[in-house]
Image 1 (tube, rainbow, N blue to C red):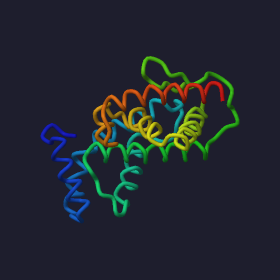
Image 2: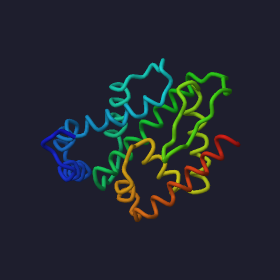
Image 3: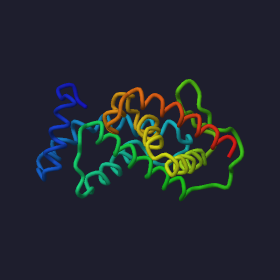
Image 4: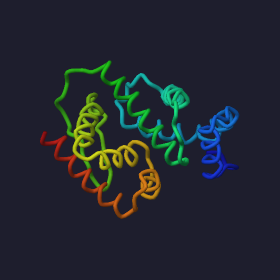
Length: 189
C-alpha cells in the first residue's frame, strides 16, 4: 500500500470492484502492488536459491488469477490479501510439482519460535508442506486456513481473525495446535 492510502481505501475499492466497478479495479492495483510484492518475497525467500520464478512474475500471475475471479464478494483488504496468498501458494506448488525432483532426503522442515521454517536445501519442502497442509485441511479446514493466512500470507493474528470471522484468542490457540500437528506430520509422517 502506498503512503497516501489506508486499509479502508483498499476495502472501499474492493467492495466497489465486487459491485462491478471496473474503474475500482484500475485504482486498486497501485494500492496493493507493494503488499503483493511483500507476500511474494516472503514466499520466494523460502524457496530454493535457484528458483526460476521471480517476485514480479509471481505477483503478476497471482494478480491475473485474482482479477479473473468471478462472483467474489471481497470483504476487506485482509480477505483480499488472504486470497492473494492462497493464489501464490497454488502457483508455487504447481511450479514445484512441474520441477519436482526425487530428492526427499535432507534437512527436515522445522517449526520453531512461532514460525514455520522451510529449508532452502530441500527442493521438495514446499511440496511436503503442501501435502501436510492438505491433510490438515481434511481434518480441520480452519486450522489449515490459519496456517495459510499466517505463514503464507503474512497476516497478523488480528487480520487472520478478521478474515475468518473468529476471535484473536481462537486464532492464537488454533495456530499453536496447527503448528504442532504440522510438525508431527512433516517430521514423523
